[in-house]
Each structure stands twice: as structure tokens, then as C-alpha cells.
Image (cartoon, rainbow, N blue to C red; front, side):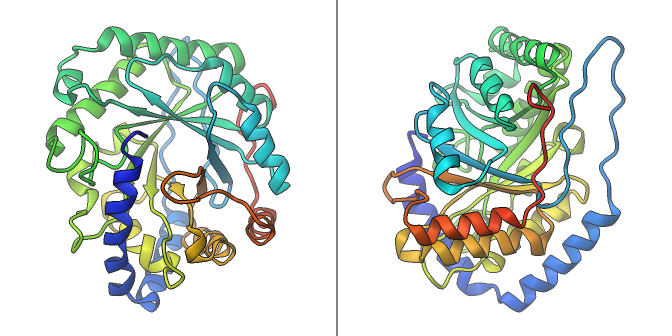
Length: 338
């Protein structure tokens, strides 16, 4: 997340253009259509290869509530403190993994014992995605995949893995204007293939894009789509900066773009938060309402003070988070706590 400050400054000011350009009424109509599609289009089950353990995550709408907290994955305490402060039990624990870092099986086990599934966003900076696609880092990928497979075989635990998130933005080396979409797709497919070759069938593959802002230079993610055979869930990242911003105009256009690519893959708001200036309690309530309206899996709150204070602090924000969580039917991911 070394580029987060630059990303937030660029992206969120651009996102204001989207918020003002799309009407709430039109986005609500999209939401109703999307919910209907989710109900009629179920993802096909992949048969278990002989001798392997396949661990699949439930994918019902409104079944996931997650967080990223500073200090993970080195320690699990920050996650426990956030859960205690909000009176909730988040079931997705996000952490970012730099290229070359090993899979944190210890953190994954702690998450599972607390009824959560680890979400690992692998950042390939500063390596070349072309080299990844050509097999230049296969030794590292095989080792990572073998550790994930061993964790699943030992505990029955699932792992959500994303790679090179937000490629339709231009703030990362693997993103728009820096690496071609074709190279991104080739690298993504290669990584998934290597993991499958190692028997890591406990992975839910999360393809994560940024909210679309055509006027601000953040295009539709279609060019970066790896294909349905290589994606399990879709993640969308986006933040609230102003009181006027609402879920439908902020996330609705990107949800619509994703639904043109796939009707099957469930969608998770994989990174989000609100600034104090935007009014956190109202935006938290808006997030929960948007997840319900669009039939999404849920969302992951970025609970960190960076260039903005994104944390869940103050009685109003905490109360809104607790009220929203109480209306979800949180899934119990497979693993030691199951």
C-alpha cells in the first residue's frame, strides 16, 4: 500500500465526477436488475480433482463483513480490538502481501479460529507482470501455492486471494498506462494456473478493480477481465469523500460494467471507507443499504489513518456499523472454527 496516498488523492477527486453524473434513480433501476440476475444465475460448481481437497466459500448476498487494520498480518490483536470496539464479528480479514513475501499461514489460522477467512491482496510491485506471465517467478508462486494448499489440507480453511488490484487505475506499476491489459490478463491467468497445478483448490480468486470514472481517466475494467474460468469473485474498491456522495452513483456504474462481463461471479466491495468530512455514520448506513439493494456479498472497511482518517471511531460511526452488521446474515467460512 505504499502508493495509497497518491491513489486516494487522484482517485477520489476524480470520483466526484461520477457521483454527479449518474442519477440515483437510474442506478437504483440497475440495482433491481442486478439483484434479479444474481438470483437466477448461479455459478457452476467445479468438480473436485481426485485426491484434492476443494474448499469453497458460501456466496450468499449480504454474508460478508470485513476489515483491514494496521498491524496485520504480523499480529491478530488489532482485528480483535476492532471487533470488540464495534461489537461485531467480521468474517473477512484483509492483508496486503508484498511480492516475495510468504503466505502467512499463522495469521490465516488465527482468522479461521475467529470465524473469518483471510483475504490476501498480492502486490507485484516492483516486478514485471510480463516476467510473471512468462514463468520467471514460478519458484516463488509454487512455494506460495503449496503453503496455501497445505493450510487448506491441514485445517479445511479457505483463502481469498487477489493479485495486482485496481489495474484500471494509473497509480500502480501494474495499472493503466504502465502495463498493458493483455499482459495483466496473461499474468493473472498464469498465477491461477500455477496455483491449480499445486493443488491449491481452497482459493477463492478475487479480481479487484477500481470504481469507474471515464471523465477522470479510470476506464471500464473490461480490458483487464481474465475470463470466468480464472475468477471466483469480483472486488470493487471505492471510497466516500463528500457528504453528497451516495452508493448508487459511486458504485453503480462499475457494478453495471462488471455485469456486462459476468452474471455469475458474486461481487464484494473489497476496499472502502469514508472521511470525517463525508459523515461516517451516514456513509456506513449507505454502504449497508447499497449492499442489500444490489445483492452484493458485503464490504471490507479500510480501518486506517493515512492521508485521511478512515477509521471506525466515534460513537456515531460505531453505532451505524453495529446496526448495519446486525442486519446481515454473516457466513461462517470453513476452517478450524467451523
